[in-house]
Length: 125
Image (cartoon, rainbow, N blue to C red):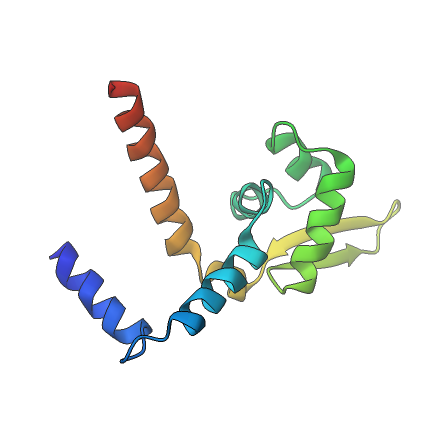
């Protein structure tokens, strides 16, 4: 059944005849938006309920304040997250994932699944 799903998706996504240039461009666009060391961990943190800057920062080992700030700005520009200013004293800021960001949730789950299987496979060697 897994193979049937894969073939169905391939027929839906890939052009016939195949257009290598278009496929590479789509892959590069995806890597540009999701690529780098920190973007997926940031998305994961926000989707796990961390909305405040410090909560996101604490949930991702090794990320610096400067890097998190830069990545959040870039992700907001790519419409992956929403930044909301809360008029309190002091002013609060919350980050939430957009519907657009949530549209690739299944991809992230598959990546986590693959990563776990890969780790098990390598450890068994």
